[in-house]
Amino acid sequence: MESLYLLIPVSLILVGLLAWILYWSVKAGQFDDLEGPGEAILMDDDTPGPQNVSKHSQK
Image: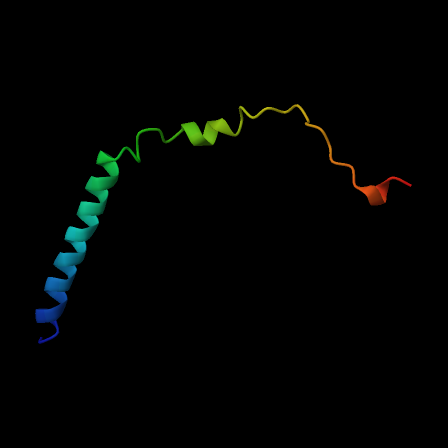
């Protein structure tokens, strides 16, 4: 029973901290574009660039 006197305030502080982190992330725009980064990889440029040739492969 004595442990509840410690665990209840600690859990309330933890819940308050998590609520503040969620509020901050929504206000900062972390959840504005959830699909953009996933689709950006599909729009990648597929043209190959110049290849580096090492001196050891030129015999």
